Length: 609
Image 1: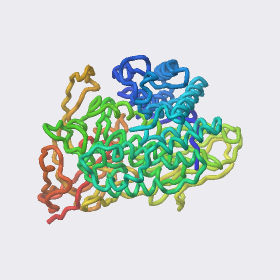
Image 2: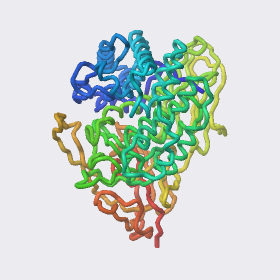
Image 3: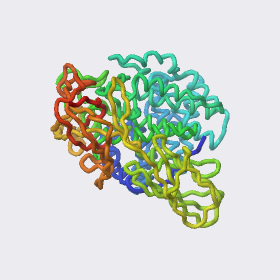
Image 4: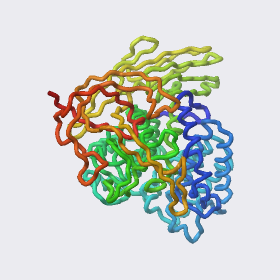
């Protein structure tokens, strides 16, 4: 078990800082200015949505503002937090509803605002916010214990999320009622294990127990509960992962869900909310279990699935993305998705539904705050991302700075600065895909690099991993290609069609209008062989920019006979009609999945003449 550093001790650098700056300039950084459900929310005294959307937005906006130390964003975050705290009722109830409405108010948002308050306290150490958190949790406990309210619906399937603010409180003040509250939540919360068989066969049916976001959240269930209650963490999450991956896994370490489980089909969708929630679950699981497999999975989804479903300027996003995504055009009739509508895959302000509009912002900032972890004997680096840690070990100042272009390059420079002599170990995780790792040019054979010594002054350590581009088997004898933590795709030349309009009083206007993406190049290809040449590219100002990627793979592909999905003219079938090449091989450059908004990712190995 590791512990997170205080997030104020971590500062993003390099491309990661640039990614956060783009986010602040985009949709997440401006929702309080232009989206009615945040700008005019009941949480701050308005008349719009007073449930999950403002807490969702703050869950990403608060760490974003403080990580970038942006004065304007910090003041706007404080404005919202103060407005919410000001409206807290005398008995501690904090959500925007009347006392008569409490019994029918889904307590999921109560738990979510608890997470937000705890996070805000970590960044600000605001005693007023902590008191609001304490009073709100005690109020919820009292009402549940007395039977005046019950957990139901979303709250029943997400009850374990409340363990996060409760753990924060217990670490600060270990009062017995907190543990009693945790046990009460466990009694009233849903047991996912009884629904496991329903995850094997996707249905055109909406349920809470096959809802992809619920399932991505619940990976952390056992870990957060048992940590708080002092019980042993088993491998329940790993068994859960293996089962879901077998029946609903994707090529980018996520699970299909549009909006409920959708099988292993490369032309089904998976929700943006599920990506950021699964990332957070992996961050928590790595911290609480120490198992590096969660960091490997985290990197794969963060570097691939997350940027793929948000526009380069981060002003628009999809509700669902597809692994093989040859067009993002509004369907004239029934959508191919399980329960989503016919525009859920468009890039826009709130395609299909607005939860992802509010929630997508937590992805990059929380990843940034998870780079460094406290180890018993020093500092553990979960991911080699450009960042800086300023902390104290044994009361002495220590700075660890990582200069790297990872994951676009597979190496980096660690600079450790200690003005006074201090002994500690620097642990650096070696990813599971790495064929070898070197420290200052010397091979190390471990799954973790450990440099234990007395540090003094400023010292630099060069770390590099090696890998080769490799084909990875996918269901139905299809393949993807990976290099390092990146999945690569054949990009499809894209034409954007902008659509500005108003719906239910909410404007979609540039830059947060809707976009349809039309394909302008051929997509029906297969791999000729397993030969790939890594091409390091200069890239542009956008880390995962589709027009100027930072890395590519040269390879040969050949055209095959590949139909559209039956009943559609903008969705590829899961597999081609034939795996025989119908033309001479062509040299192509594959780019990172996260850069390619239209793409072919799962392709067969074809037979050539």
